Length: 351
Image (tube, rainbow, N blue to C red; front, side, top):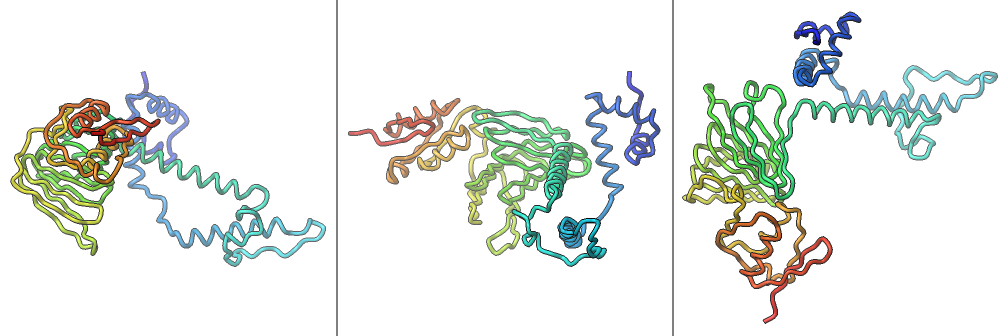
C-alpha cells in the first residue's frame, strides 16, 4: 500500500524541498493510476501560485540572436596559438538569416540543439494541454452520450468533439468548446452559474439552464433552442459584438461571412432527429445534403451538374449509415450512384 500523500507534502515536493524518502514515496503514490488525476490537479494549482517568470518576448528574441551570433563568432576564432578578440558580453544583434551557414544553423551542431530544445518545449506545452483538459469525441457515423461533472448531459453527433477543463469544472467555470454538433441538457445551479459553449467559428452560446442543439462546422453555426433561455454572442464583419436572445423554438443561423438569420415559432422537438438515426429535410438542396454526408460519414460526394445540385428533398428518413442515405437519395430524387474509388458521383437517371 502506498503512503498517503496530502497537498502540503506534494507542494514541498514540487518546490524541491522533499527528502529522498519523501520523493520515493511520492513517486510510488503518483505512479498509481488512482492518484494520477489528483497529482496533476495539485500540480496545476501549485504552478498557478508559483509562476516562475513573466515572458518578455522581444528581449528573449534579442538574447537568442546574440547567442547564435556569439556561437558563430567563437567558431570563427583562430586557434589558441593565435588568440583573437574576445566577444563582448552583449554582441550586436544579428538577423538569423545572415548567419553564414545553410538555413541559419550555427556550427558544431549548436543549431540542432536549439531546435531540439524548442521541440521539447512545444511538446511539454502539448502535454500540459492534455493534462489540464479532457476531450470527448466521436468517429464518423458514431454518436455518444456524455455526463459532465455538474450533471449536465451532452449527446455528440458524428465526427464531433467536446473539450472542457479537467479540473474545476462547475466550481470555477462551466465553459466547453465544441467542434461539430451536440445536444446539450444543462442543469441549473444554485448560484445561477452560466454555461458557455465556445465554437471555432467564433459565436458563444451562453445559457442558464436549458436544452438546445449547437451545430458548429466550417460551413456555419446553427443554434436551436428546445426549452429554456439562450443568448448567442457573435461578432459582425465590422468587429462589433452583438447578441441574440432566443426563445424556445427559435433557430439562429450564422454563416462564415457573418450573416445572421433567425427563424421563430419553430415547433420545439424533444431531441434532434440525428439522435435517433433519422434525417429531417425541408426543401433541403442536394448540395447541402452532400455536405452533411461529408461531415457525418467522411464521404466525398460529387454532383454531376449544377442543376442536379439544386434538387431538393423533404421529409424524415431513417438511415444508420452513408449507404442507406445514398439509396434514399437515389430512389427519391431519381439519381444514379457511381462509385469511383473513394468518391461517389451522383448523376440524373437517363429517361
